Image (tube, rainbow, N blue to C red; front, side):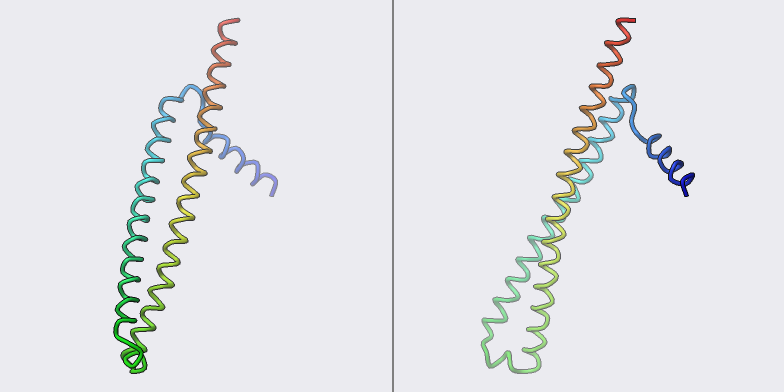
Length: 130
């Protein structure tokens, strides 16, 4: 068990960027954040469209009146409106979770880049003194 965790540790440490590769790592981070921002914009658009559809569906349901809602077709319509409402709530939750995830990822990558810059500057200073 300990050997497996040490190999996992070694693999994770091997993936850490080195200060020598700082420019390439910045480009990689920028492309990663751009990709996540694209997904975030798509989910925001999808959530807005879905909620507009849910509201229109609900307004149509109430526009028909109470007598129509008692009929079997009206009950099916109400059930569909309820399902759409639940799906809309789930889509909003998905959007908020994804936006929070992207914000946290952005902050972590910013701190990681600052740390790499600091390591590179320390190596330059120590290299000049030697």
